[in-house]
Image (cartoon, rainbow, N blue to C red; front, top):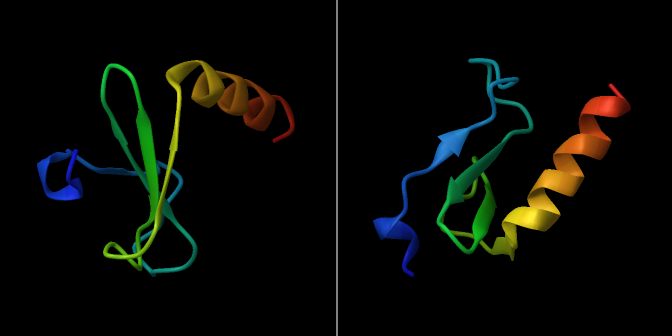
Length: 62
């Protein structure tokens, strides 16, 4: 799926000053992840199960 067909969402922790941010686009079978400052750059794709595991780990260590 081309990234132009995806609906991207920026992290809710992102501020308006730039900085380090990611964006995600979810499809039924894949979570697409990219750098919000380099939208044409490389993307990481993972399964929804992996994304859920990552979020669980990330939110327990905050």
